[in-house]
Length: 131
Image 1 (cartoon, rainbow, N blue to C red):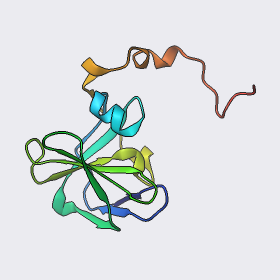
Image 2: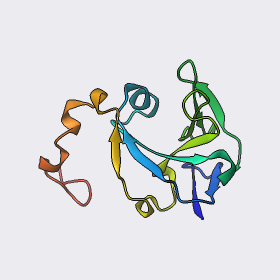
Image 3: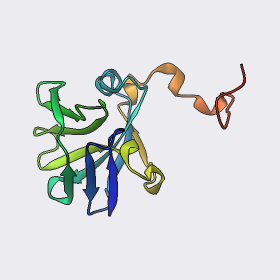
């Protein structure tokens, strides 16, 4: 059983299967909706997810709907009846243990921000560096 939720805890979810589709999305729609350069998603059948708490829905495109916590604003779910009928895309970083799932793919790399393609060459710090 995988569990997760929003930042404030008002929305919680449980997934009864291990998602077979998990990846990072670089599309502009995900970037604009999240304010992040990339968003991790895991796709699961609707009937394998139990959601506790209320979400708000935003129509981010003609068929796409983004669901978020109305209290803290955390983006949680994406639905699109045209592309993912009967399935729910869940932002994988909202899992209680996001390290559980391996990351097999990146998608929409045609939209990737140029500086995202060479992150391994940047200096790294365990925490925020001294100023």
